[in-house]
Length: 121
Image (cartoon, rainbow, N blue to C red):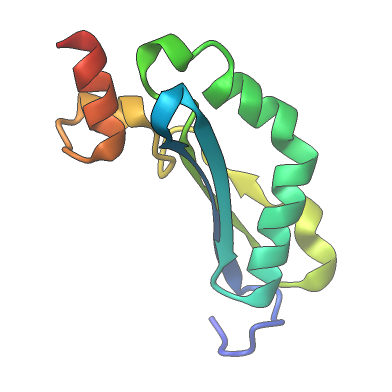
C-alpha cells in the first residue's frame, strides 16, 4: 500500500450515523452525521446516503418504532480513495454496521440498547 491517498490501491472508509434524540412530549429529533477518513470519504458518505436512502430506510427504519430502536443505525462504508470512484463504495450489511438491536443482543449497555431493554423489560 502506498501513502499517496489518490493511488488506486488505497481504501477509504466512512460512516453514516442516524440518531434519534427523544424530546419532551414524545417529540423526536433525527440527526445524521457523516464522516470519512478523507474529504473524499465524507463526500462518498453523503452520496451513498442520498443514493441509498430508501434501501437504508427499509432496512433500519421502516416498522421499528414499536421496538424502541427508533430506526437508529451506524453504517460503515468502504471504497476506493479516487474522486471518480464514489459509485464503487459499499456497505457490509452485517459486519461492521451497528444498530440498537445488535447492541442489545450482544449485551452492550448504551442509550440505544437501553431503549430496547426498557421496551422488553
